Image (cartoon, rainbow over all chains, first blue to last red; front, side, top):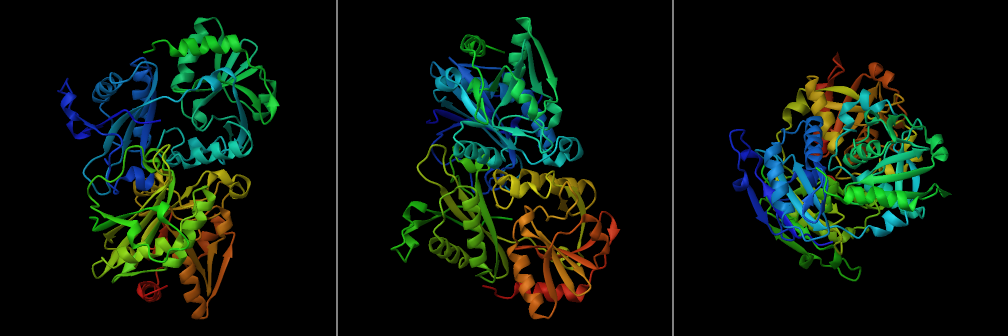
Length: 294
Length: 294
């Protein structure tokens, strides 16, 4: 993956009286040095992000991603992002995309240590080819996330509902999954409830019911999952948020890990136990996810 | 705090046959752009670090910090740092320090996404004035760390003994402490055992016994704590690692949060309950910590 475009946003230029923010973006060479070593994003993983799928130049679900960025900012005591400024930045970057799929990242960092304000930037890169994960499916292993399902409500400083830059554990979980000859991980709370993947939400199918763990349980509210639930409801299926015991995984008729760039990856094994992949149904979900969505 | 010096290390130049690594360091302007937006340290908090105290140009406990850097690298599946290369980098940076106290940071990042190798750099900055914390002491509040004391052994992918760049939770805990009108936090496991501060180790005094929680419980093995234990043992005190129940905090005769730059900060209140500060004894600890240590 090579970065194709990047720009830096000046958060200090966000002003409610302003309607055109073009002058508050500075295009940069995405491969050249752009950040100082004093950046708290790099020293402390102290900041938040979003990854937006771009299909043929159209940024998917921009509003939902911007709202989640604002939600993460609140949880992390970061200054509220000016959503209109970010929307215009997303549009400016998305229009540089080549045909096909790209990944657009928004980063809002606490800034340079002792600096005056946050730093913020947006990058674009061609998406990796996810055909195999979408068609053949992925093998997942359940991994203990360490905290119990009551921790998020009890200890908000754990930032469990925020999409922060502190993803070292998420990356370690994916490496652990590969050590176990799987493709991805599925986090489970220490008291045995299904949570989410390190970079995805999980959707389980039980007959004609589609279930995702409750967002209050210390997981991200997935933009792709929400979008798929709307789509499934339109098709007449029941969709619901529930506490899902890990023991219920073996009763699921199907499962997907869903995310903004890989989209719906059908799970073909959980902890080495095979799970059926409905190829046609999964393909219909990914056709929907690749259609323009706002 | 302004950065006074920084250099980038070329890990690819680390070669066991080599004895002089000077050519593998590139001095950079610490305030100028140096890192690309593709850096995994900044995108994912994916890397490790150490903070070394520098006193009058002498880097304290360099060997212990380098060994912990290597330990963190193992836990995070990062390539092993070449310790002689890093030792020479530390020396090269430390000799640029002004008289007085400075902070020297080592960072080893997983590198640029899909890049060929890790990136690594060392920074130097004057230390903040920590006199008040060392003399008047600090108020701390206990905060739930979310995981139980068995989690580190059960789930190594949580990286609980590694000093990673994913410190968003540590920073959020300090903000929560300030909201509660305290200066710092003391993490406690979800099953009620004392762990560590967000950027420090805790030492408790019970009579002539000095106690620190066991490093196996998912905390960092503090270089300053180890150094102080050696010093206290030489002075004839008993030092020991134990599981410490949070309920035992109220029986402590004294407590300190200890770290490489702030050194020994006596705790003058835990959860608003006052604790005696022994000013002379604490001063003797900080005199020791400010003396040249290897």
